[in-house]
Length: 169
Image 1: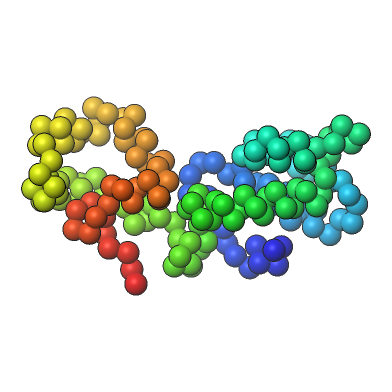
Image 2 (image 1 turned 30 degrees about the horizontal axis):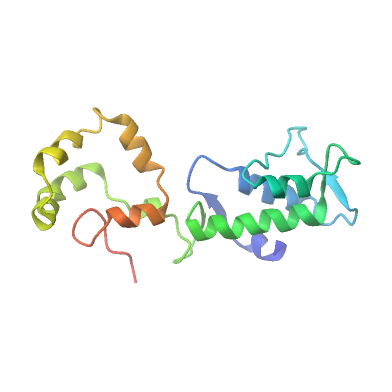
């Protein structure tokens, strides 16, 4: 797994980099043969593993070795969560078709507004509701939520010819 992550350029698709930071931490200690590695990076900052479940967090730490992670458990944890983040689109692989950054497939707001009448006519949606949420400046919280939605949720909002570009083949 370490060799694979050395070859791939991984990027976070949101502001949450905890998983990638943990992968980088595990990579930094990949040559160690000891059972425990430090739970902080080279600058002394603790590695944030709050992305992991409580069970994983308990497995990583050991009360007999405070300030350290169990190395093998840490590796298993970060690669398990890396696989999950790749699946959900929270992490993208540069140059990949299947694991590309999904935010690049979204339309600009102006293009969405131009397509809105066609979408409303095709879906028989109520025009007054769509016009109430049209200006992003009136609803910054809604715009922020849409900007951070997972690809699986955004799929529900997309349909060809409405709000999203067709995916490249």
